[in-house]
Image 1: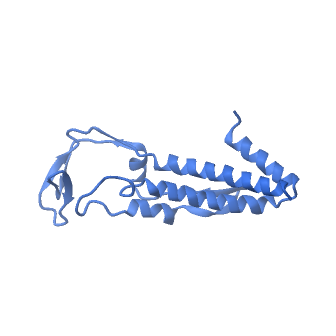
Image 2 (image 1 turned 180 degrees about the vertical axis):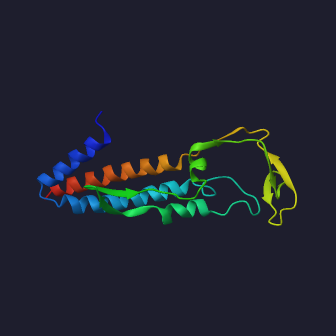
Image 3 (image 1 turned 45 degrees about the horizontal axis):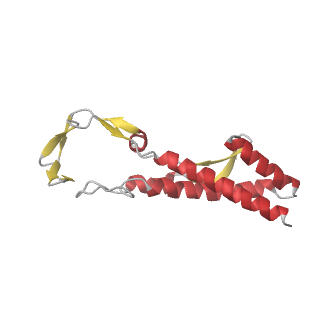
Length: 166
């Protein structure tokens, strides 16, 4: 099985042989693929796609930052066209890849039945990390990269078919 890069190069060569403007095509396809990657990563970022709830505990900022931090418009850097799937929230990597959970006290965090809630005034608090020592990641970036690759292949295949039918 050939690598992703060699598959893309093959499709670009086919487009070039058919007289297409490969730079223009790649710019359009890379932009669309990056937009799809951002949407895929956002779709599974908490609280999206997660069964999590609790008063004052979920803001949705992590999911929103995929759109604001990613660079979907391709730019030329060092002779290569690049786009970026990014999330600059300081805790994004912990949610993405997972993290160890040490036992510690969280002021203001209280248990209300099955839900955790946060009191902004800081009253109350509980010890966390007593039962769960590791929180697995949800791999948002991996899903985004998968969406990027699928979109890139699909769109280039469409362009090649269209160019060959002329």
